[in-house]
Length: 322
Image 1 (cartoon, helix red, strand yellow):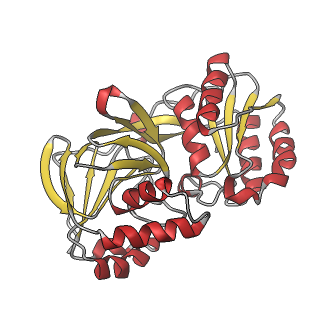
Image 2 (cartoon, one colour):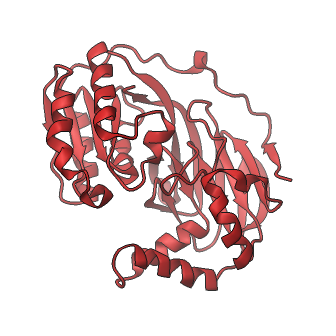
């Protein structure tokens, strides 16, 4: 049976604990758009998206960037310059870059889904259609409303701090991503498929040390995920009970799977039914400390910090234009 075991005494954060949204800042709307998101299939929609956002009655400023690092820097510069809102048009990676700038600030944020995976958008209640999402954001701007949602703050070696909105992967999926990113051939999705085959052949449980609200757990596992939201990888509900408004993180650990069992269980992640497997354990905590050898984490699908990391649920850290 799955063990849904709280780590220590944890109290859920209620709406009364959440900070008040308050009036929206004045100023233009900055838009970060990734033209390559979703293999470029929504690229032609950008003029319509900007038009819908402009219907809120504010100037709209398109940020320019030629790399993910530059995109993140452009978001920071826009927030520092005093924009009234930040909108990200793209997938989870684009959202992840924008979150680094608005997390913990009064600048509200709106995500427009235009990527291959749009997990944060879906798990926070935005429409899957980009134009419909832009209209929701414009209406919130026009009516001066936002709602607070949680983010996860993680601190790695050397005190480096990052934020994420959806899920941190620190197991087999992170290892596969790391392998695929090192490969130069083949191009496209086949590279990821080949990386899966290579890492399946090398599959072995790793020893993880988890500290959940200060309580230590030693586990041998092949899958470890820490979710602020439920989904990653384009709809895989790895942490199916995660709620980005409860002030807590959901931790899902897949234990000593062999290759055959892992491949049988993996499709069940889309429905979230994998958590009933006897080798899967679930926990909930406000703070998660995670240690293992040789793991680089992936947060919101983006390469992130190497272990060890400390992850903390930050209630109401983001003002969402919805």
